[in-house]
Image 1 (cartoon, one colour):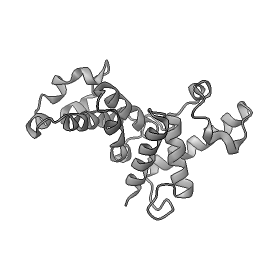
Image 2: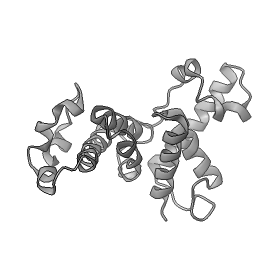
Image 3: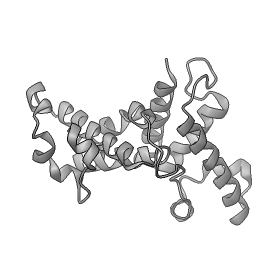
Image 4: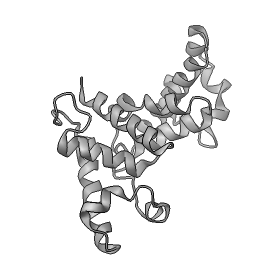
Amino acid sequence: FTDDTSMALCLANSLVVKGDLNLYDQLVRYKWWYRAGYMSSTGKCFDIGLSTSQSLQEFESRQMDFSKKYNIAYEEIDYIAGDKHLIDEFNVYCSDTEVAGNGALMRLGPVPLFFYRFPKYAVEYAGRSALITHGDVKAYDACRYYSALIVAALQDYTKEQLLDKQFYSKHMEWFGERPLCNEIKQIA
C-alpha cells in the first residue's frame, strides 16, 4: 500500500492508543514511519510528499529544542504525549501557512470514523489533524468538509443527501464558528 495508507494507519493507531485526538502523538507516529518504516508495507518510508517531509523535519527540530529547554532526554521526547502540561507547551503546527497539498486529505479517514457519533468533533479534529503538516486553510477546510461527508455516510445518509448542493448549509453546526473558506465552499 501507499505512503498515504501508512500515514492513515499511524493516525488510526494514535487515536486507538490515546483514545482521543493527540496531535503530538500523531506526529510522533508519522516520524516513526518516516524514519523507521513504522506502519509501512515495505518496512521503510518509500515515498513521502514534500510538505509532509518538511513538516516532520520541523517537528524533529522542535523536539530537539524542546528536549533541551525542559531537560528531557531526547530518547524520551517521543513519549511525552501523555503529559498534558508539556504537550500544551509544544507547538505541533509544523507547517507553513501557505502549504497545501492532498496528503492531509488522503490520510484523514480514521478521524471521522473514530468521532462519527460527534460530528462537530469529527469535522474540527479532521481539520486540526491536517494543519500539523499542511498549514493552508484550504487543506484544513477540505479535510473538514470531507470529514463531514464521511460522518454523514456513516450515519446512513443517502447518496442524494450527500451530494445535495445544500449539504454544507444544512450542516453548518458541524463546522462550528469557522465557516469554510471560499475556495472549498465553491466545491461544497
